[in-house]
Length: 568
Image (tube, rainbow, N blue to C red; front, side, top):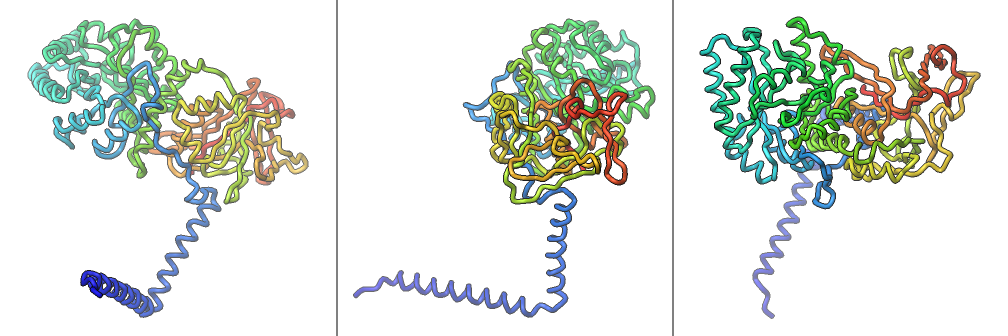
């Protein structure tokens, strides 16, 4: 009988492999045994610290690390891609990461184009950048920003700026983009001579015409001579060149509470940049150099995507574009410090940006249909939810609605009861939240008539003055308190509550961060009968509900809270 020599080699190889594995395991065990007592104590200590941290984190209400809210990437296959009236864009400054990482995330979210910053060109050659954008089917919408162009008494300075501008135009031809964003001058050494400003901007426009380039002029809120929207419109009209138009930026509009519908903007809007921000930005002072510096810091750190902040006129701005015959891109320009500190997948941030533009579109599409969330049920959980009976707000006398509730660290394993579940499901599908609902086991169902509307409907023990809640499977509860660990997650849940569930913002508590007052607790729900409820707690946990002037006895008459988001 013939035995294949190759088989002998194979068997010998297998035996050697087993022997080597045995030797490796044996030597490893000998090494572990040989470790001295102090090393073993160190290993045990590290394990104990890790387990202790997880236990303390859960006890403090942050929840188990495995239970973090999951928001999957947007599905933008051809079948599911949302149809806009406008083409969509986002500035690369909105996202952290390298330029290629940013462009890939922007493409995956479904944007049509991108706004490039000059810093992007420091990373990559313009030819290579254009090729990569083309491979992702992304249009380079514009290049930005040119600063301090106009208002120079010294013609030598201005001629040098025109020379630099011409070099930019040549780069734009490589990138195949025809819009350049120019910011109003912030240099205190420049001149406020308005005829001089107009003449120099006109010169720049005529130079741009040779290259087929449009100049989109933007009023910076901290500009020296042109900072309001009215001043911007006046400047564009005086320059009176076809290729010199305006950039509408939501931040600068809201800073001075301007109304774009008071102007005839037909054929003069070159780009529209949406963002959101604090509801109190118009109260920021702008007179001194120190004021302007702080405003710059705020504007470059704390803008948000539409629906995450407090601007109330974004839908009005969006609708006015139709009457202006605007046919260009709707874009996002969001300077956010926390986005750039985010260590997770930047796709999440890009997707939320795309959702925020969908929101601006669908409110008209769905005809702003009213509906209500009637209750929230707790589904089966493998972990025990906590009941917080402490007030969330430090200043209870300002709080609207009821401050306490079921404390969760994520939106997961719940059922949302709505008056019209089909409409809410459709709305969330348009907003690309359908995968989010599946990943987090969130169910939407119709109200069968038994859903309780507020947490305090569940037995209030009047003799002790404290709410009582026994958490059981599928028990309808309100409100829930979502505890988050960072501002990025805070902003993401803000978007889901205000845009996805279309809840009304009832109250915000602020804390001073980075020298600015930023929200740390935001309550969402519904306002009822115009009554303001105030929850006062004493040291014993007793509370009092107060209306405009009188104590409220009927809980049906107060504003009620459904979800409170709290950053620790």
